[in-house]
Image (tube, rainbow, N blue to C red; front, top):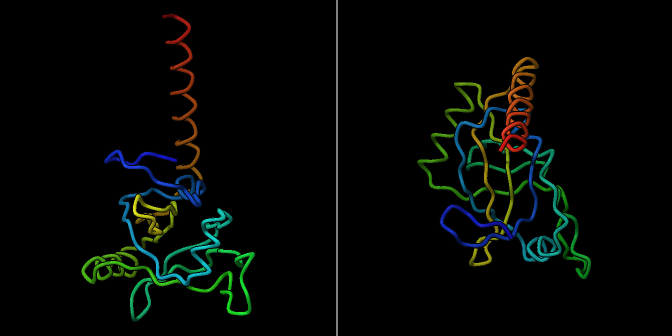
Length: 158
């Protein structure tokens, strides 16, 4: 369990580590997900993947596309489809702002992590992101390596 900013516990379901490597994350937004019952039960088993997914603006709102929530093991014929699009639950003002950023400014909406909040509700953190170029990725890696080396030097001296 990971503690959030306000000190409450979150149970992590899935994390997209590649997103911070491939994008500059400018803003993080917490959204709810419209899920079926078998999807929530499958998420409690902890086998979801959001690595290849993205959020897309449609006419009725924002949708999470290509997220993989495998079928519930004890489900029956009314089980859900693993890669179906899922609606994101946000305020209308937030949806409008994010849609404008994606359409006009060339941003993308990358899912960062999926978790259960303290009340047991599934939440998704999406990041308003701008793509990195190869030299940006190299600079980030160089800065990260330098900070590690600096910490080692300080630890060895003191």
